[in-house]
Image (cartoon, rainbow over all chains, first blue to last red):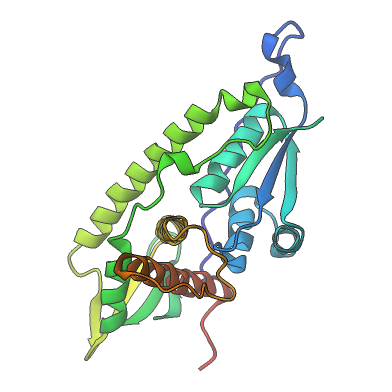
Length: 102
Length: 164
């Protein structure tokens, strides 16, 4: 059976000095996928599997959360990784954003 | 259109082999001509108010524009490849996609689907909008539905061939 393309690797990040003015970016950032009526459920599941390398069951759980609750918090990451994931998800046409964790 | 089997060739990853009717080829090519539909303004990096995130909005738009240009280049090459659809029987063809081609074709089809949905005013699709469509809207709705059909066939290939 052919396999989907390999999951997309997130960028490696370097630890920053405490004086780095961008230290806020090291706080948690949430990657959230929002519901829309146009993306197919099976497609959303597939995208989660590809972008995060998740097994299907986990991807489906988040897809159903998006569908039923209107959104799903997918991962909590550093700024760079969260941005990377948002770019990947949006490249696939999903409505995904990054939000600073309060 | 249906998934037939996987086909391994040398050290390359196994390709996905599909059977497609002449009419479906015409529909697929017609749908692909809609690409790209989304523009960079569609993409939003955040829904929150954090300024340090909003500063990255332009980067996202540039990344999406770059990705679309790359996909368009691949699509043009895909469509220009002589013998892409190999005749197998009268009105029946066979074609194959590498795992990488599967992924970008899924993204291209989704761009058409989502972009047409945006052009239609982002309606709820279940049940279908009762509004009477003009010719342009009808074309967009057809492309939206057809791109979804082809996405389903491609995604179904990951589960293997349908039982005979």
